[in-house]
Length: 148
Image (cartoon, rainbow, N blue to C red; front, top):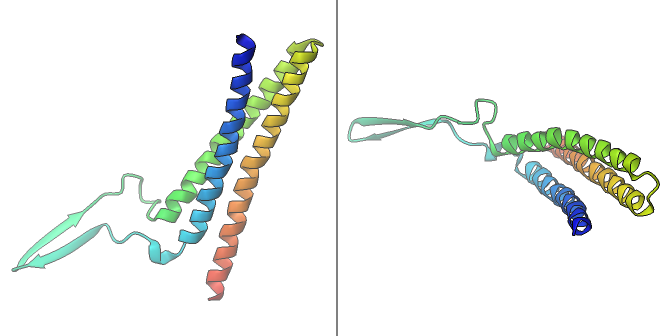
């Protein structure tokens, strides 16, 4: 029973890393497509005059003054995911190393530890690869926009 739980845990971690890559890739593509300044959100206050009455309405940005458009929000979210993902990857590399040391020559535990380490390395490559791809796509879109 305990062995089945451990196998499912490794599968869960691998699936989380795999789906994290998909989410980061989709966010990076969305940032690249939506980084056009025409999609930026409008001013925070608007005025409407009706029958000589002036109404001023405004919504304060709960995310702060730095995040003023959807592309900026997505870039910030992607940076947050990468900043969280790197320490998680480091933790799981250390955990896999601990599993290798505690295997003490037991072949099944050694194979499990090696598989866990391989999955962590693949996950790290996916997270960092998604970050690099998003930066490359964003840079290309900026160069195209400057040329137009």
